[in-house]
Image 1 (tube, rainbow, N blue to C red):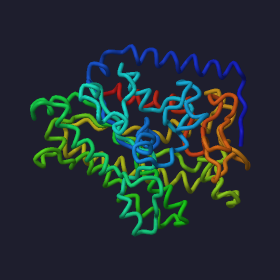
Image 2 (image 1 turned 120 degrees about the horizontal axis):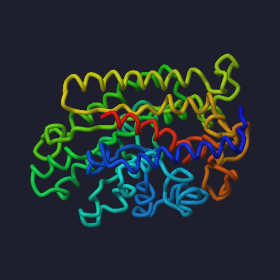
Image 3 (image 1 turned 90 degrees about the vertical axis):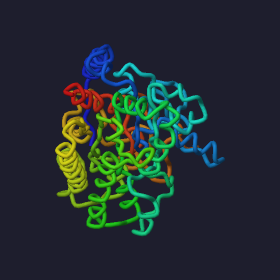
Image 4 (image 1 turned 120 degrees about the vertical axis):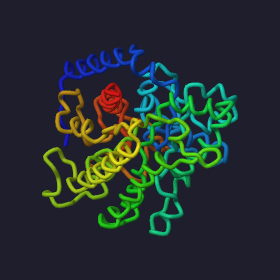
Length: 382
């Protein structure tokens, strides 16, 4: 399902969004004044080169993000990002006046001062639940065995090198923004791709949400002290995207009853699953706020800003809502066996900014930029 916008609408989109970001990046109060650094955890939605660095260090096959046309829009070079340009975490860093967050694996041997504005621990393919736990449920993870717990342990190992004393660490965490995700999407993706039914996948939701919220509430750093007790006060916790609009799932479940699709071409039952995850996550975050009234926990709504793009693509200048920019074949231009960046697929559409989806799983920079704008509005309310 494609909706076509005029070139003037497309230009209007970039004028408006660029104006908003010009304002955001110039604001030194309250955002820039509040945070001295950012620590990011998650999967490929936030990975700024960790999987690429891991693959190189272990002499493994490089991920498709290491090959063109990834990185073509903003960087004009290969970066390891699963996108044509910047990710939400990149726009966040820009708005805070920081350089792009260095990947932990690509920089961990550098001096601590290289992490002066933060570090990114997100790894493409990462899950919230441990891979061994998922494997017992018949859900394999062929990408990486790095879960949210593993990423947090990397952070715990790094922290002593970033501060001279417990007092310094407390101040560091007090002035840091902790971005907990997006994470959990792969737990569900791997389950669906393994052929698990919706009932089996729904059983994972409270487990995934518990891992996310317990990571906020119960991270132990140095002498078993809790992260919150050490001074962390601000967390950004993203929800899930509307996976019923994902070209990868639309391709997998192609041929479903027409009544299972919404008016925009998305699978209703899959979007309802995303909403279920997001509702449960918000409920648990609410409990944490009550338990820790001095802690600021911002829920980053990825779902609704993205759905607005599918519902009204003309307003944002998108021409293609469900077709993939960097893909090949089928009604959604997506083929599970030919990934963007693979040897047989190193081309993409002429204008990624007119597409919502980059490769069928990840979004274009244009989409991430609009979602990031909505997230910043939430941060502005701190």
